[in-house]
Each structure stands twice: as structure tokens, then as C-alpha cells.
Image 1 (cartoon, rainbow, N blue to C red):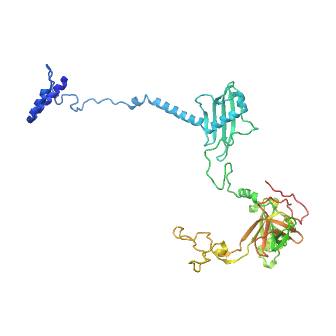
Image 2: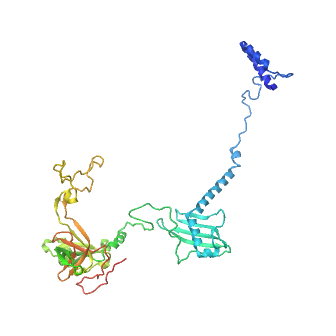
Image 3: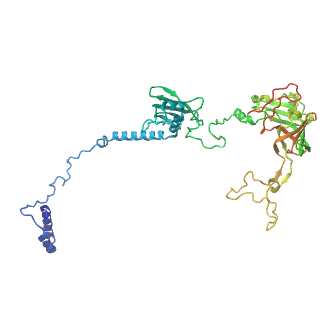
Length: 472
């Protein structure tokens, strides 16, 4: 046993003997087994207030405080450098793996000028390619250049593309190759067009909008002029005409020999009453009247309107919109049956036959309830008109219910003109059109068919104007 350990044990046993006499037997047995060193003096225990740390002195010197800059200062520049280099490497990796770099590199491989100067197997010049420049697809700016090499030589390829608007597409401004001898070759061929037109896409694609589908479309302008431009494609080139439905008949088709039903419409003194212009009214339209009405049955304001334009009072007065001022007929001109041609298509509008108050089965085609098996007196009833608490405890607007049926304007599109009799003012239409016999019918060129090649002037005027043709 080491001497230091033996001396400590001896001191411990001595203190135990003095304090606890009843343990003498156990302590004596332990002392027999302890080996005490010979010629060794014991060191006394320290006394109170004898050591340097045994007391708290007010004038004791405090330890020096180490500055944090001395600990972190030497390693901070190294940390900043590592962080900057790592960020640049990450950004460069994102650039090198982007679709823009891949597209430009593929286009260079397929370019005749690039293969002639660099040869085959065109790829990045360095093992770790570095992409210089800006690649900001969010704001529509791409301006990059990087080194390339092939089997014949090396060079630097530069690509620059910009996006004009937020909804527009990218347009290539520069795509060139700079060789080792300082020559700058333009790779963008005007004959082939822009190879990156549909490759580079904006990452700020707008959300789907049912009023503006696709990209590159201009924004809708909120003005009356813009509204007229949007509706110009479906606005007729010339005015329509008014007629009276005389009834239905049948004719035989000379080509097929089949009997087909037709509707006879007669025109009665159809005349142009007034004009509507964009400068004064905001749009172009022709006011057409038909029939005759006694002056005593016409109100004074309307009678003054007829007198101002030099037209006799009319039974019916209707307005037809036209695209531009070329479709404005002269005030007082007559519009006869020859205004339409045989074989052309027209749209017929008239008020449908009124059928009075009708139930849900007749008005909306409801199936109805069962004819037996527990149904009592509700065979033709409409049933429930809505939910309770879940639907707001109300009848929702537009609910199909019993009510007055008919008596509203109905349009039949693409009705073919079978025959025209200009002397009698009769226009024969294929099939049926809405309205009862004797009702007023508005006829105009079909908007879903090509515009007919007809003159702008009426048949009663000798001077022939320039014909209106379909526009694409």
C-alpha cells in the first residue's frame, strides 16, 4: 500500500477511536491489516484561515475576464469565408442544373456554327462549371455566360433573354459564342427563329382564370371603346330587317324531292328612321321601323322624332347594332325582301306564344310524382321548394316553380333562307321560328356563319356600294 494512503487511514482510525469507543474491536482489526511505513512523519491538517481559499477577503484580486473577441475573433473570418463560398457554390449548382443552362447547351450542340467551331461532344469546359451572370426568371431577366469545349476547341457561350411584361414570354436578345482567338459568332439564326421561344418559362405563372385563358393575352381594359373592340367580331356588318309572321307552309326540295316545312315572313314598309353613332351615343346602330300608325295614336315626342327625320310614323320601331359606320344606311331608305339572299343564314327573334299560368311539369318538364302507391292529390305537384336550415330557410333565386309560361323573346339561330320575293316583300325561311301568326319577327345575319357578300346599299337605291365580305 502506498505510504500516503496508509497515513490517511491511520488518521481516520484515530478519529474514530476517540469519538466512538464501541467500535474499538473493528478498528483494531483494521489496524492489524494496515501496513504503516517506517520513518514517516505525519502532516497536520490545515487550520482555519490558514489556506489561500479558506476565507473570503474583500481585497482579494479577481481573475481577469477573457474577451469574447479573443475567443471567436480569430475563427470568425474563416467562418465567413466558408459560408460565402458555400453559398456561391450552392447558387452555382442551381444555375448549372437549371433548365435554361441545359437548353442553351443542347441548342449549342445542335447548332451548325457551334459544331463547326467546337466540334463534337460539346460540354462544359471545366470539371466544376461556373455559371457567370444573372438568372432571375421571376423578374424576367436572364444574362449568363459560361465556358464550353469540344473536340476542336474551346470558347465562351453568352445567352441573354428578357421578358417584356408579366404575362409575356421570354425573348432572346443575344446568343453568341466567343472563341479562343477573340472572334464572336452569332448563333441566333433569323431564318430558324428563336429556339428558346417555348423553352424558357416564367416561374410567376398566373392562376387559372376563366375570363383570360393562356399566357400572352392582353389585359382587359375597362372602357366603352375596349368593349366595342371585344364585341366587334360578333357584331353584324349591316343592319337587320323587320317582318310579320304570316304562317307556315311546305315546299318540295328540287334536289332531294323531299317535302320540307317553311315559315313565311312578310315585310311591310321597312324604313330606316335614325342612326346611332359612337361620337354621340357610344356605339353604331340603325333604327328601323315597319308598318304604319295614325299620327293621332302617336305621342308628341315620338311624333317629333319622326318629323325631324322626315319619316312617317311606324307601327314598330327596333334598333340593330352594326360594327362600324359602313353599316349605317341613309335615313329614309327602304329595306325590302331583297336585303337577304337565297341560301344565306339568318337569326330570327320573336316573342314566343304566351301559354298563361302553367305548372311545373308543363313549364319545366318535371317528371311528377307517382300515379299511385300512397300519393294523394299531389301527382303533378312540384314538390319541395328548398331546404330548411341548411339552405337558409328560404327559396333560392331562380328556383323552377309554376308561373306564367311563354311571352318572352326567343332566338332561333342559323335559319336558312329558302326563297326571296322582293316584289311582294316575302322571305321564306326553312323550318319553324318562334312566335304565333301575326307576330313581329326580327331578321339579321347569322353571327355563327360567315358574313354574306352583300352590298351596303339597299336594293331600292341604284348606287351600289362596296360589298361586305367575311373577315378572318
